[in-house]
Amino acid sequence: MNIPFVDLASQYNSIQSEINGAISNVISETAFIGGKYAGIFEKEFAKYLNINHVVSCANGTDSLELLLKAYNIGNGDEVIVPANSWISTSECISSVGAKVVFVDTHPQSYTIDVSQIEKNITPKTKAIIPVHLYGCPADMDEIMRIASKHELLVIEDCAQAHGAIYKGKIVGTIGHAASFSFYPGKNLGAYGDAGCVTTNDENISFKVRMIANHGSLKKHEHIMEGRNSRMDGIQAAILSAKLPHLKKWTEARIQNAAIYTSFLEKSGLQLPLIPEGYQHVFHLYVVQVNNRLDVQQKLKAAGIETGIHYPTALPLLKAYQHLGHVPSDFPVAFSQMDRVLSLPMYAELTEQQIKFVVDELTKCLN
Ligand SMILES: *Cc1c(COP(=O)(O)O)cnc(C)c1O
Image (cartoon, rainbow, N blue to C red; front, side, top):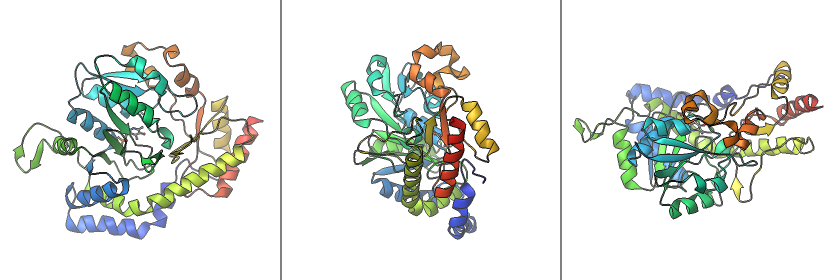
């Protein structure tokens, strides 16, 4: 059996005519940048989240940066982020000239350890960017409580968590604003780069829209300097074609995760935790193993592709060596980075495939 880590082709095959129709409409109308199709998708995604404003942009990294700019976060400011994430979460902070402050990972949930946020707050702290990592919501009640006590902004990084629910609230609607990525491999993915900002704050949505379009909302009227970060019409139309399927795909991911968990329950591996009241949407199904390299090679030999999210905790990347962090600053993130292993996960995965992955993984453990 051959089991890829992600399988975008099988999803495309299931909705081929819808996708092809969407792309051909954009081409025949030459609605290539922003405009009609981006506007339609923004309205549909706003309805899906039940939020007032969605502003489309070029990718998820930009959506974070656009938000920091819209909130006037920059030189002299500090922003708190989790030590384990994709680099975009911290990169956006340096991009606007602010300082990145890392906080260690919670040992079971893999999201930011909320018990360690307050000791990292200084008079310069302006915002917290929690990440709903792997599809598991961060502990938003506690984060919002700390933020309100210290008058900080909360920008949710929802790149891995479309449709995840925290105590009855869908992520992307809990903080002051949120960022989504529609990178092809995400739970809702375009066929190229795309992203968006979500917020109930009209002023912020207005600013983000302006910054993302050269400081302009009307042709040739540039109120300020901005930049170019718009969503392609083709990507927007593809996202509109895919959005009606998201609920079903999310349910399938959750179901597949439950199958993994039931098969692996007695393996002794640390399995993903789903805290009470959370809907984890399993962008990734992550376990922890000893001898990860060996396990990955054996699985590969059996035809199973796996991933690592992430091999190096952000503060220990070369990109952040100027901050002078050492592994003991982030003991949990450091201990997990050599152990985490992401198993194949997508809606189209069959029970038979999951069984095969589990059987081969179990062989590696014995
Ligand atoms: C994918 C991702 C992003 C960035 O998205 P792009 O669209 O690739 O720029 C940001 N944060 C996290 C946690 C991600 O996984």
